[in-house]
Amino acid sequence: MIREFEGKTEQEAIDNAIKELNLGREDFDVEVIESEKKGLFRKGSVTIRIHVEEAAEESRGNIHGSVAASDDFEEKVIVFVKTVLVKMGFPGAVSIAFRRDYKLGLNIDSKDSGIIIGKKGKNLDALQLLTNVYSGQLDNSKKVVIDSENYRLRHEEYLVKLAYKTAEQVKDSKRSRLLEPMNPFERRLIHTALNDILDIDTRSEGDGLFKQVRVFYKGLKT
Image 1: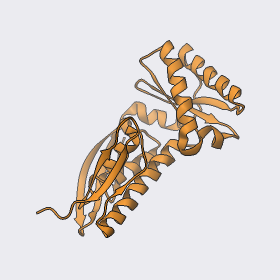
Image 2 (image 1 turned 120 degrees about the vertical axis):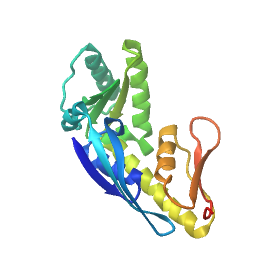
Image 3 (image 1 turned 180 degrees about the horizontal axis):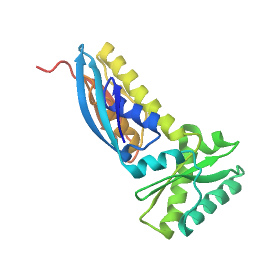
Image 4 (image 1 turned 135 degrees about the horizontal axis):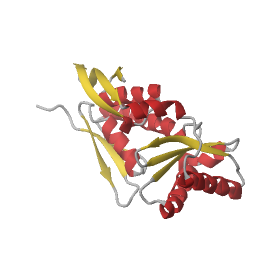
């Protein structure tokens, strides 16, 4: 499948494709076919053409977790997550959302999804980490991704909007701003989102896994 999408930046166009097609970034190749720059702050528009692999397109309809376990590994992982949820006191239905390369996506449907997700997704991340420790004992070549109520996609959209808003504030004030600590994946989203913004640059600061991204004004290039 070949489709075209537009955005103010290449990353925004990619985000639009991900949201509309319910695919992961790794499921398609991107070709920039038009890039029009307007003004001094950001590119006016970017048009991309995406090429979706057949297998990824077929899995798109399963994004909400309608697929049953296909082998012993998947069955054991699902049972493990269900058991943990029960022991937490927040039982829920667990189903497969996608299978891509060496990733297995699970979706949790529960009336207590808000608690399971937790503040800034910390409970969901902890559950995912615990599940990967268990699944690694079964097959260390596979990674399990756990989501509920499309939290992870919504969180990515929030981070991209935060990046653009912060860039505008830095542009107006000419003073840098330091964002809250983020994991490597979240920081990469910020860096990528602001990569095409003129006069704005970013860098990671701090030690350890959770570093902070500084957004700063670098002035016009000559």
